[in-house]
Image (cartoon, rainbow, N blue to C red; front, top):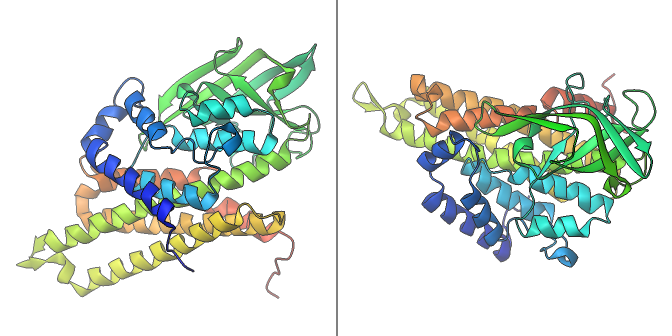
Length: 379
């Protein structure tokens, strides 16, 4: 597969990398993580200024109408730089709005950096099954009322609005009967409990207790939100694969540099053939993950839904396995230093672990891949 990016895509990547190197170094990131907010308004403003927030937004709403491949370029650099701002949560929310249509004003606010979004999709009992929805959203007068609790809402505490999946009909795990809503974070009856995750990002538990929203908050039709939810989550999984590749690029480079400089028995440990073999294995995993991440970015917009699901799940499986292998090898090759907060490699490993668990881990997507029509079991 050709991995050469267009000139405009490379310019985006270069601009992001220069900013990360100059203004978002490892020590700056640590200060942001340990701040009360856990994110930086200054960094967010810079992302907006660089056009990163406008990239996935349609031109009609002031954006650049960027493709998933364009977004892959951005996510790789954010992964390489361990950026903790709510970019992924916001652009995933924007994809829900793009697919549903009719919310142009909100997309304009996203493009301008005025609105941060979060996607409240998972629940305590649902694990990776986004169709397992117990939160309810029923009609009430000229609007809807929401009741239920959403867990591990990435950057929920920093969002100005939530994309919420709720059940309007059917049984708890039915794909039919799921509705999607845009819910402002300050809605009466919505309670947000913010916390820091192991990778330095932020997440929240969001509880809805009689939270009322107008009819305009509905995304798509009543009880017909599954197709949007399914497509948007595949888009999100594709972005995570790209971020993982960037993080693995960084941890691989750091490990290689360490092997060249760490001395043992009077020589750099990188001269030992056994360690060279381990680095070669890491490289193979990384390049296979890169190939699958690119394929997912190309196919995620496919009109063939079955093909999209197959490719995205295959990518999430391959990238998930690579995250585990590359991360574990990097930590071991660094020795005890590999798990300390003082070393960027430890933070990359934690982020890779969380990426594997977000929007379906490798086991979940392997089952999903097998379940797709056309898959032939071995005799």
